[in-house]
Length: 153
Image 1 (cartoon, one colour):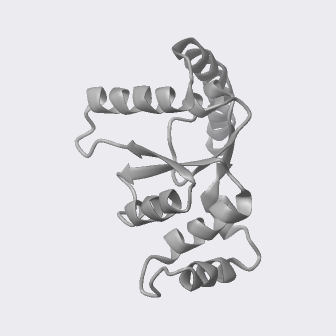
Image 2 (cartoon, rainbow, N blue to C red; image 1 turned 60 degrees about the vertical axis):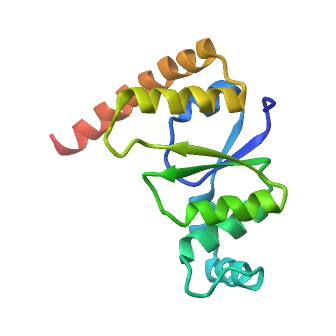
Image 3 (spheres, helix red, strand yellow; image 1 turned 45 degrees about the vertical axis):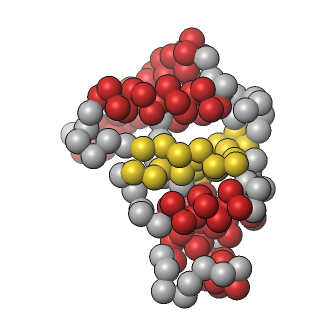
């Protein structure tokens, strides 16, 4: 993957990898739900062949992918909606690159580390870039945590 390309995400993932690769990140959930006519996104997916009884959220994300013009989609295929597999297959068939990411059901740290490494490789993110991005984001997260603490204390 080249820096500057846009990547859509279907769920929360280790964002340090994406920013460390230089990609532009688009949360497809927000593209779908913030659309003033989000029902039309669901209907468009049904016209493209998604069954009416299938998950409305997946259908909305499908249309959001096309509306956003992302180069690739990172789809959480374990630990999120099981319909994501069908979404990935459809997007791949249409020529859109999909990258799977899995969260371990049993919270296995080694499995998660392996998934992060695979994602880094798929995006061309170097370990140093990812770690530098993590340090930068941790600083921001610390400040946001302090703001949160001040709101309830």
